[in-house]
Length: 185
Length: 99
Image (tube, rainbow over the protein chains, first blue to last red):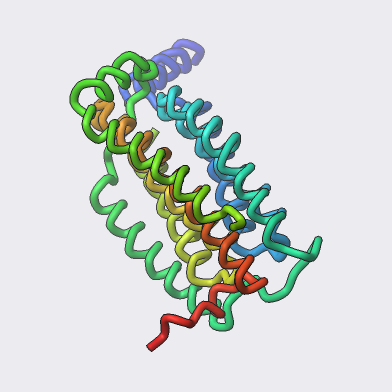
């Protein structure tokens, strides 16, 4: 009896070894973060308080940074935290404080026909989900060490040098443009 | 981990962002919805970089982050200017260009 049980156990272990390794902890972490992100994103587009919307957006962007780490893109995660949570959110909060008079809940944040957005979003998601499932049903993201940052910088300074310079020029132009647009006189 | 996980999460974020752009009347909230859309695109880029074991996807994701930062800067400057001229940032009131 015991012998048969151990044989079964061995067979079970062999079977689990043969299957492609699925990291359960990774999947649970992904699911938790994804749930928080979807809830927060939903709150961004439904809440009645503009400041709360900005704070929920912080939650979404932090979740994106966490997913970047799960997808072994560590440099991007750090860049996401610094650029979005550090800089863009401060800009948003400045924008909110400079353009609104009342504190707290506010009516009239939505358009007249805002319900039209619901069918559009649902149909779009149905279409995207169908295409994604059909195309990438069996593709597995294999666990790997993080991409080294040297590789990223090598790409920037060789193959993507011209786009990199163009982006830096765009950033300069945007900064100057923002100053010109927003100055008082 | 399955590629479908990442892609479906990005699709959900994208659709929520599209809904926000359609439904919201406040210009700052529309800009936030655009940020949601760009975050979804970045997730897709990174997932495909991992799937193909190729770092080019991350390169493009960094480009998207830089362009998004520029877009928010210019967009909020425009919102500020509209607010100064009209004392409101309701987007349905901006109908001067209507024929």
